[in-house]
Image (cartoon, rainbow, N blue to C red; front, top):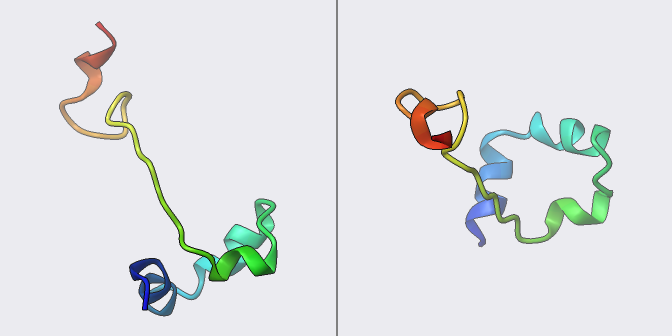
Length: 51
């Protein structure tokens, strides 16, 4: 089983949220790859990366 599908089992409440943002039901079963940037204010200590 794909890790992304294991995560769906751990957090099933995310499916309706994803559907609400435009995902299609068939997309939920596909492999999911998340890319996150460390730039910005979301991570402590990363505010300087825009300089």
